[in-house]
Image (tube, rainbow, N blue to C red; front, side, top):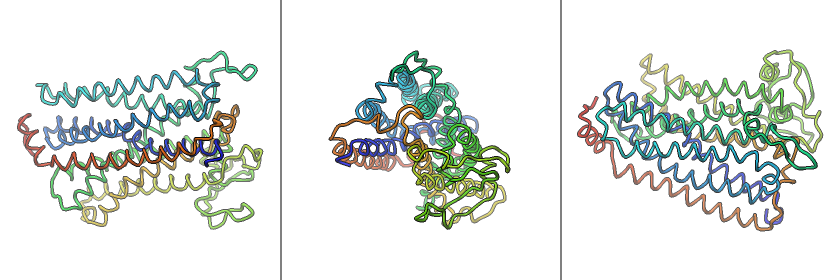
Length: 448
């Protein structure tokens, strides 16, 4: 790493994005649940939901602060680690990067007003309306930054003359072919992961002996909404597979270890590759890859061997695909069982072993998010702009990137530990009972 600037730049970018995606996912997903809790509190005249919204909003502020730091670092690293890419495409991606910052400030302004005006509106709905631009701002922030990633996968909106990008149209570049499925997948996955992270907290509190209705309501709400978005992610994932089959077949082929072009292609799950690059111990689902790619079990799916070796993505992306798909299916099953159990009044959903499964659901969902981004980024290799510029052509030649990796790793460790410590102290010093009494005294509500 210390002697190869290209590899060091890739690893530092991987480290930064992998850390930032945690806070970005929370930043996109949690505002929706703050708004839903606030709405339920007003609709049901239930102070528990009002308190959920307030507590989640205060915790959310901490993650936003760290997300700003890591987001700023990403912008700096784009210029420092990938100077040739920025020289070529900087005037294209500058617009969505600027709009992403604008969306963040739009969100932050209304979030601040919401937090500091909780008791100043006679009409509770007025306070609720402040959360709508927060949710919109968080979603638009994800929209603009994801269009940059879409552009890197499906570059358009310009001409290249003598190695120079000319006739740039940033708006056309933003609305590239890859953006619709990517944006939908990012938003749905963020909402799903936020739901299961909040459910993890509620289930953990119940496991630790809390009998408070607050945690039971939080668990019930987040698990039900989590089911909706988990199914949505699966549906959007199907559209993503069809996009890859049409426009990035080499990525789909690498993710599925599909080497030879054939009709009625099977889907391979799990397994390993032997010394001859032949899959072993994999679960083979006949015709499923053709269905995933084109919706027809007899469709022909292009194999990886159709592409030059130097343009083939690394085969380890298959494992990232397996992790993402497996966790997604597990979370659909877990949340469906919870929903069915509440309707049928099954007692096992309140058992410790089942609640421990819910506790694991939040970290697993975040792992699925990470795996999905690793699949997207590694699967684009060797390109930084598909078909135009490779990663090795875009990278810096500096000899100090390896040292930067170590320093940033230390910084992210401090930020991660600091986030956990601050959040734990914040909520430990403000227990549910104390805050609920305060809400009731200021709003005149009754505990339900």
